[in-house]
Length: 163
Image (cartoon, rainbow, N blue to C red; front, side):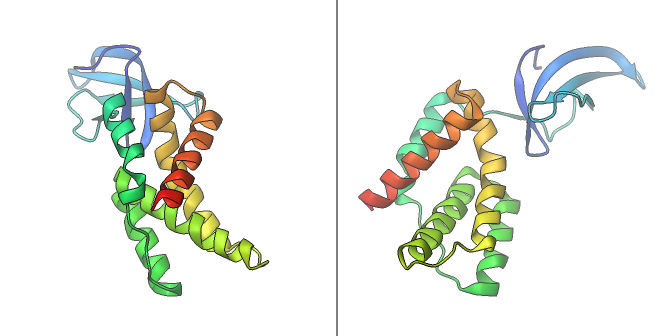
């Protein structure tokens, strides 16, 4: 059982356990969760809810970030690429989210290198992947969202340069 002050993942959002209400509804204990991206919202979730997940450990996060160069990029074009982006975002694994970010970053870098504007599709999917990944990593790495985003992008660039 989690305790007040713990961070959990609930429906792809990082939440802090604000309170625990015993026998709150239907004689069931509930966590009162506050999403870190909207502290005005309070969610009541039964303690038995199986969609609550732990944040990754610091070792797991560092291993994932150190492994960025080994994460492949997507090679699909246009409609197939968007379908693949959607599937990876939906899966939501760290590797899938990094794959989306890495692919979108490289595609946009190539466009900018060729003096073209970035693709709104790639930009949007990169932002979606970051929205799911960065808050979790920020808590684990004990950094702000902005610091974490810069840190992950730097790791992403290192991984691309070293690939």
